[in-house]
Length: 569
Ligand SMILES: *[C@@H]1O[C@H](CO)[C@@H](O)[C@H](O)[C@H]1NC(C)=O
Ligand SMILES: *[C@@H]1O[C@H](CO)[C@@H](O)[C@H](O)[C@H]1NC(C)=O
Ligand SMILES: *[C@@H]1O[C@H](CO)[C@@H](O)[C@H](O)[C@H]1NC(C)=O
Ligand SMILES: *[C@@H]1O[C@H](CO)[C@@H](O)[C@H](O)[C@H]1NC(C)=O
Ligand SMILES: *[C@@H]1O[C@H](CO)[C@@H](O)[C@H](O)[C@H]1NC(C)=O
Ligand SMILES: *[C@@H]1O[C@H](CO)[C@@H](O)[C@H](O)[C@H]1NC(C)=O
Ligand SMILES: *[C@@H]1O[C@H](CO)[C@@H](O)[C@H](O)[C@H]1NC(C)=O
Ligand SMILES: *[C@@H]1O[C@H](CO)[C@@H](O)[C@H](O)[C@H]1NC(C)=O
Ligand SMILES: *[C@@H]1O[C@H](CO)[C@@H](O)[C@H](O)[C@H]1NC(C)=O
Image (cartoon, rainbow, N blue to C red; front, side, top):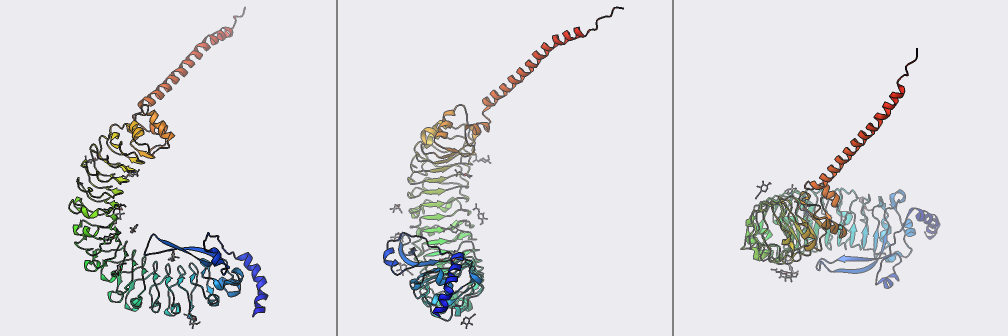
């Protein structure tokens, strides 16, 4: 055996050297010295996301070999070949990546010789894997994007230590109890397959997965999930079922331990509130792009840890204000693109939205806001009222919003901005008032907003705009947009100069010449040009006249010459 191996070693080495390349990136790794004593292949620092602490990433090092994009002989990887690419002493190998290598067959011996192998990535190949003979110590297996249309329970049953399995981006239409015996599983990626239903026969044994924390079923063709057999996953924290054909959010999707529920892009009309209100630990709910018409009272009655609520692009006309009681910790609230009216945030329930940082009310039917509407939302940094039906804004509407950075009021019918409206918005960086009915806007109204970077007041009914104030009031300005027809170019020549010097971008035109040519008010310049052209024309005509005059005597002289001298008879 040894003889055969070393006999083949040389030619394979040459072959390997020409055909294969080992990606051995250098990493800056504190523990490098310690680990590299036994680690002869690449040393990689892995940042592992810690779901408990979201922010906190812990770093550790492990031996890793990456063989990707390889033209493997016969699309197979055998032990001899593997040895030559990787080092001899790979008994320490912990992580092996053979992704996108057109691999069809892998000699399972290879893997079996690396007892420390924990992470195997075979994504993007053509492997019909069958590693059923041996027990594995693997904790992470990625066989995504392999064109798999079936996984048999046998295939996985020996991966007893598996914590994560990625079978996403295949063609699976059923699951066949294949996770049955994998009691250590914490994460299952089944997204982007062709699953149509999950019922007892196909998914029954998921019930037993006591350690499962994350389940990805998004981008399948699921229309129903059978309630009884799916219900007990006592530790499930993240469930993604977006991009399916689900019509009701009933109790089958509800796990008491859930922290994130992503069900966007379905056809959900109803939330079973008796199910939803059990989710005491829910922090993220995404139910955007569905068919919800109302949010009934107490839908979230025990979900008081909610931080992100995204209900954009539904058909909501009513949101029962009782729901806001559970939004006390919400920082992102997205109601964009519904049919909500001013009643959505009434002065009685805004008290509960004090934590909101980002509030999207754009593309709704709000026709009025009141002094009190935002009066308690002192942590707001971003507010969008884009595309509503507002006509006026009470002067103290934004007084409490001292942290606001972005305010979008575009596409309403606002006719007037009262004095002092923006006075307290000291942090404001972006203000969009385009497409309204403003007939006047004194830029002095912005003299407290010295951090303003982007200002848009295009498409209004203004008759004048004093650009000089843009220069003096807004030292941080980066982009500005206005109707160029308003601008008296000669009057503001020095403002344009200033813009050019400070690289302030005028969105509708690039520089003074362009802005002023497209400006219809700039009659004087056009007048001067026209006058100049006329003067030139006149000069040319005059010149011709002179030339002609000069010619005439000449020709008469000629004719004199030409007059035949009468011949004497
Ligand atoms: C998987 O491998 C085992 C043992 O090598 C064999 O008995 C079984 O038939 C194989 N299964 C498939 C579906 O190829
Ligand atoms: C699972 O596989 C898909 C497709 O290859 C990949 O995009 C995704 O990052 C993988 N997920 C994990 C957690 O490894
Ligand atoms: C909610 O989270 C807390 C703290 O993480 C945990 O102790 C509790 O068991 C969780 N509740 C449920 C129903 O899982
Ligand atoms: C919710 O899903 C939509 C897709 O419909 C996505 O664009 C959005 O970013 C998601 N929101 C959150 C808060 O994750
Ligand atoms: C809001 O979150 C904080 C920590 O982020 C927590 O201490 C508090 O209990 C939460 N409030 C509610 C009502 O759950
Ligand atoms: C609003 O939602 C509908 C679907 O509900 C979608 O077709 C449309 O593009 C969305 N419009 C905007 C401006 O987001
Ligand atoms: C506002 O934000 C500050 C700092 O982020 C935070 O300490 C405070 O609790 C927030 N206020 C409310 C009402 O959430
Ligand atoms: C302001 O809103 C309009 C939509 O009405 C949009 O076209 C424009 O790009 C926005 N301006 C800025 C500076 O974002
Ligand atoms: C705003 O202008 C539009 C079109 O110019 C007009 O139809 C609308 O009635 C105006 N609204 C108000 C409140 O003036």
